[in-house]
Length: 275
Image (cartoon, rainbow, N blue to C red):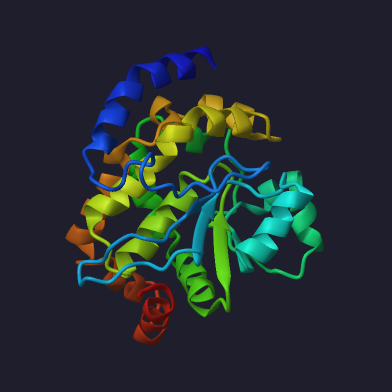
């Protein structure tokens, strides 16, 4: 991890100064982070303003890294304090099999395994890894957005119909989770710059995120094989996604329509999440 550590150090000041320019979004003044024993990147998606003057409700939608290491105290908070009714697991079947669900597997909270892709994570010599080396992280996000339309649509339907709070997560809570967050925020009418800012928040915990993922089964080799920018949450990576959606689809709602999400579901999502 020497290379990763040096790269993180080089970008820390640039990342912090970019984020502080967004009034009201600096995590020192708006604390979205929910501190748990078994997670390092569990955040509330509430509070963001929309272009039409509404606001996302707090304590309703949550984004996170993997939940299998939650303590009994964590699970009690999710069940009682956050009133979770549904969990969407974006990890692949192999990831789920390797790490499991932990204590949440014993709870009566709805579980929806919805991998955005269901292959392995790749190795240094795989063809997928070689192709990834030639692409920016933003380009990889755009590719996933287009090839994973069906599972992304399923995630949106689950979250729109959840009877209580809902959390969606992958392993790090940055990439697949970040993409779902962008789709949701865009469909709810949150401006693009705030979508990018929400993604960049993961950068404040990137050291802890990488340390945690490197200790999970099967991830160390895959992470070492990925391009250097995978180990960051730079604004330009998510900016590539919102720019692509605007150019190709017009809006995130139109992207979801192309994926098979009808207006009834979109309205259900807005009614549930906005005030």
